[in-house]
Image (cartoon, rainbow, N blue to C red; front, side, top):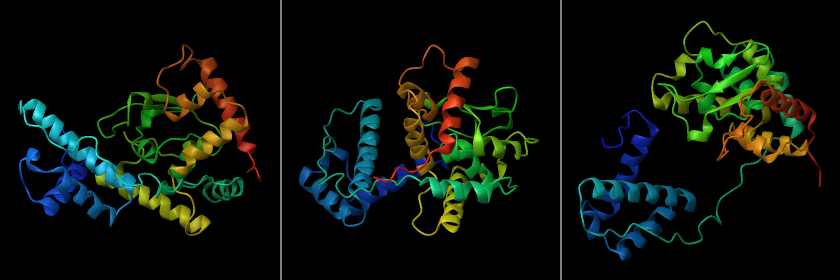
Length: 282
């Protein structure tokens, strides 16, 4: 309630789930009554089910709940969910693989000119580096097919953005421009069927990944790998770091030229150069 979270949102269900893990394992007690020994035992138990990075996220969530409630209700007790140690943290993580140039070309060929919405989203992701949730939440007014085709990403009532830097302008070129020309922009939102609830976006992402697996085979990269691959492609054509960060929504500060016609044209030029990117063989 304090955070104003929608009960259908992933953030809400994640918090409820994580607090459930705690109470199922250690019982439901005032936070300051959980000892460090008990918490470490809980950590070991969770490591039997999920990776270290997931355990860290779960405990960060639990700690954030306690911190907020303690502050808002002026509770002076000290809880021991801060500064926890996760044994061998990060050593069990797997890097998300980039697409190879051959994989990208195959995907481009399969989804080119498609009227299937899942394939249209894939087309939008290939040459924009958007997150799948950002593409799914596009409003028709966000898609500009004028003199400099581009997408305007900003928070709207049906889409949260990860952070302030996620608000950005992305030029449309290559497969993303082709996909944009195939979109039905007659309704307020481009993909309304996946905006009924927060969980519907998860379904959309599963559909996207399933389609990629059908095209490329089991174990292929997922939708999120388009972001990493675009960054690799842009580095290969010597796109400046600040520009790569702005395109991906990672910029901590916005350049003075951000959003001007010249800046948009320059960004589009670097993405166009990267369309011919070929995977380097070391």
